[in-house]
Length: 171
Image (cartoon, rainbow, N blue to C red; front, side, top):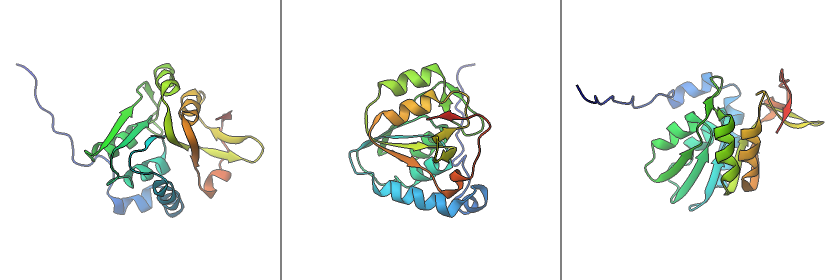
């Protein structure tokens, strides 16, 4: 019988109009993403973490030239796949259904080996006492991705100061 081509949908993510209603604190997260995107220069090697603000950042990188991106997010990867001028790598590993993040030993090994100019990291919560906190029981791949950057930026808005995670694991 052989292989059969399966057409990818043109857009598995929601339209930009729908983002306002589907992403909590859209305006603040979009502003953070705009600021982060302004820090990305043509020719940069960057890492982008997972989460809604990371996805919004990826959507603002179209048009950058000679950009190489490493990510642990299937949503970021799909967004970048739409732009043939952006080179990207996704780390693999187990995928968390809550945010599309790859984690586990395979992801951690890959992320420990990369070196990028800038790392844009996501966080579930920010605590003045404990720092950046992940809700995931094992945040080692998130931590490795953040540490891969010569310059490190946390993609956080004011709502993350109000979140209280069930499990506190410091990034």
